[in-house]
Image 1: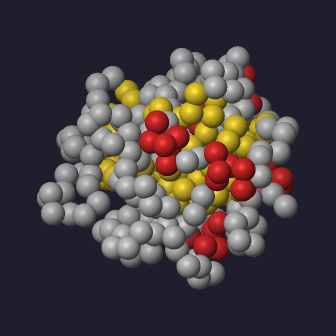
Image 2 (image 1 turned 90 degrees about the vertical axis):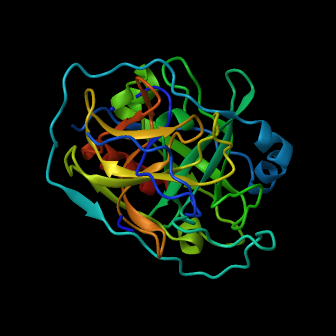
Image 3 (image 1 turned 45 degrees about the vertical axis):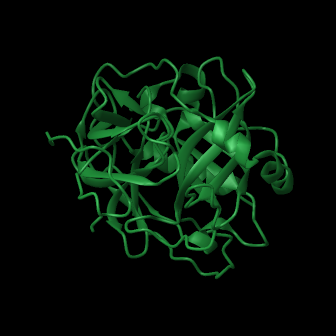
Length: 323
């Protein structure tokens, strides 16, 4: 297989029921802004974060939804030359912690996982999706802005962890805790849906950096609004359970403002899941070209931020903070 919002979901290319990783239900196809900002406080230790996220807390986590958003009045075209960063394959072999009989499912990626965090504004626990992204320091995870910060009037999330290739309670590559969270200022200050993007700097686990263990996706920006993508995520709102990694495929188009839109019916919990160009289900890698932001209209479409120079600015900023 080849491989700017409200509430999250996903669009799809319908596969037969026998395919191991299910798709969401199919539907027909049809700047540099302000400076990025970061959380000031170091997140709790890896041991403390993992201890907090018991199976019971994970099961009870609420699918995250983006708050009310501010949308651009008119669409913006690509704001510069198309750019691309290549992905990276795992370079370290580790003993996985997967349950007996849990192997890799067709189309499932080890670079994609579930995100868990606490919103200090209300003390509740939430769940999103995310994916590793290649960088020199191998420590970055891409997700949605509302999965790291509450937007206008909100706060930075706490107890933030990433669980690669989670499935039915199994954590085959462990639980990775965040070191710092970053997001665009336009998201933090005004919940601008065109800027609903976040990048998280992860702590090491067992002395290893996350992309060295599971690999890291590439990154692309300024590639236009119409591209073929594979979207991966963990929808947790009915009728989904959040226990499996789902995917959708199709060609995107300009939705509203600086946003791309696609057919997909993934529900809450898929927020932050990657929209991947040239996804390769043999190695689980592709080029992240957007992330799940919110549902548009009915349950069959979703929007994501258009990746222009702003995502590259955020990426460079996060990498510069990574130790």
